[in-house]
Length: 515
Image 1 (tube, rainbow, N blue to C red):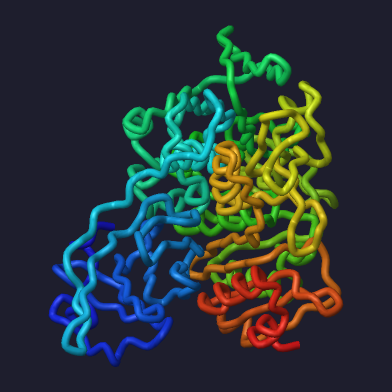
Image 2: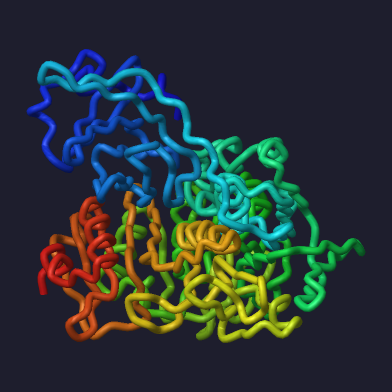
């Protein structure tokens, strides 16, 4: 959203505000020269940056100031107050940075300051090849250039599309609320301008770590100084009778989402197999298009494995309020042209079937060349694999999680992007450990769930607020440790939980969710 589309509010910061209004660490949202601006005092310094997050336009004035950064309340992007630089995805672009002057007891916001110039890397390989043009790969390529790396960068994508906003495929784009032009992260020409060789619709056949070569399916080979594997995940596919019929769809790629949208033009009744986040987001988007939806899943409470019974039950009720029917504790037997059959003999009419039963990491390339695999590609804290000068990031990476010491692998967009950034820094010799707290969000109609941390299992769940009123923070705990916090309608609490986990501050987490 451009600045002139944003409604201006608050004081005119160009005209000056009383310096006494500027409390330490607090934010003052206003405007200057026709643009929304955020003013923040840190010690004796006062900073002014654009007030809207460059990701989805989230209000930074409602976010959280941490040291000399501000974090977006919607999706936890992070910006430097000094430069406006986007320090943490999902934001990829900086926000404007403004000059500030203090005189006669007032603070004045001046004009925009020039963007900071790329930094020169401490060191770097002769060339970098990135296999996978999704969240991790695309951010890694851009980070290399932003850090001043001048060697050759090749970004290889198996899909024909330029890197795109994957989370939107099951949300606003599928629902019809996000236009096509919102989906690419960058236009194709932007990669050329940055000197990134973008190879799309190209499969990689094999990797030779000893020779430092990547062999493409078209017969070409590419040498590399460093290699980043960011091959992502593929949907789990059924092989039962009818699973290959033309009205049966998966949702992973932009092409998948487009095919679903086209099918919705004629579809009246859909059956979604799987009460996963993707399955339920698809259900919500199909309801927005007027399609009748039934969700079939073997579990008795949707999303309970990740969010627990209380939130899972509330999400079910939310979907039922929007007309979705559930067949839980049920298993699919077969698919026909006009219906699906369940165990027990029940048949459901369906002219559209969507399968959302999970994904598997694409590790075949890594495994074939001898790289260590353990339910993903094994990496150290710097995202290095067992092969020299080969890194891995995103859905395939299984890394040591700093809060528990155990290796984990997660399939979240923001995590993949953040790993892509850190992998690029380490390719340049920065030795930056990946210590971010995992974060994801899921949208169901007008309800957003934010989740920070990681909990495969827990001993108890503590709740602050009212889940059904969509105003709550829920902590998943084992012993004296808070493993994860999910929030609905409490964006600030989600940010505070994230930063408390970064500090290993259990007392602060108990303040957010007592228990």
